[in-house]
Structure formats: structure tokens, C-alpha cells
Length: 191
Image 1 (cartoon, rainbow, N blue to C red):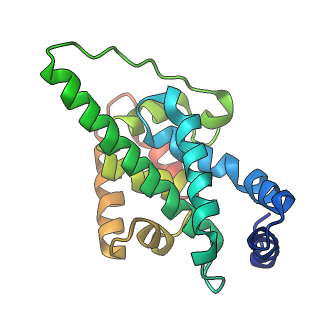
Image 2 (image 1 turned 90 degrees about the vertical axis):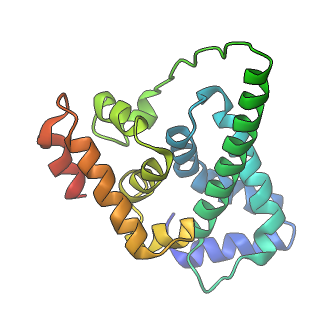
């Protein structure tokens, strides 16, 4: 489901209190949101919780959605805000934990095949995950979620030029990784 009118109808019905319509809206968007959250969170065990918080925020703020604009970028904007809030909360917890002189436990990545299929291979996913968060954001939104540069700018609330610069910087950093080579990046650049 990608047509604007189908989303508009589900949103209209959800706003009027139809729980089934909200369920359909959720079902039609959750995979895309889940992938985004999965790739932008370091602690994979919290992905489900963050996705749930995103949909709680969607329900709370659906009355603010401007039906003249596309729904998916609006939804991704909420997702990015929730991910940032989660990361901020995690960072504060981590700092408090460090202050108590305890070592943080290591996090093990959980790559489900469904999520990994969104990119070209596990090796590329690992390299993308090594990018700084701001660069990883634009790469995930631009190439995994296939948003235009203008949509990425709208989602992140940054200028299009900044998106272009971050994409360029991220691809440049990925090119420097010897084990990846330019073969995969040519595929990414052509997406």
C-alpha cells in the first residue's frame, strides 16, 4: 500500500475511532518502520519497544497529520524522533552507569534475514552500522527505505544540502573500507 488515497482513507477512519483501520495502517507500515529502527539502534533487544512507542506517538499525533503531505515521511519523522529520544535516554543511563564504575555489557547484533535482505549483504550492513549515527541515518533512510533526498531532509528537518553532504561523506567512508571494495557501492549509488 503506497497510494496516498489509501493512506488518507485509513487515517480518516482511524481519526474517527475505527480500531480496525488503525490496525490496517499499522500492518501496512510496520515492516518499513521496523527496518529503520533496527538499523538505527545499537541495542537490538529494544527494537520492539521503540517500534511500539512510535505507533503510540502516531496514534497520539494523527490529528496533527497534514493530509496534503505524504504519510510515510511524516511517519518516519516520528520514528526518527523516537529513536533519538531512546538514544538520548540510553546515553544518560550509560553515563550514570559509568559514573558508578561498572563496565557496560557487550551487545550482540541480531541480524534477522528479513532485515538484512533490505541491504545487499551482512558485510555491508556491518560497515553501515560502523558509520557515525548522523551518516547512518541518511544512508538508511535514503537507500534502505528509498526516500528521496528531499524526503530525508523533511524527515530529519535538515536542509537538502546537508543530506547530500552526509550521503557523500558516508559513501566516501564506506569506500575506504578495504573488505567492501567499490563493487557494492556502485549498486548502492545506482539505487
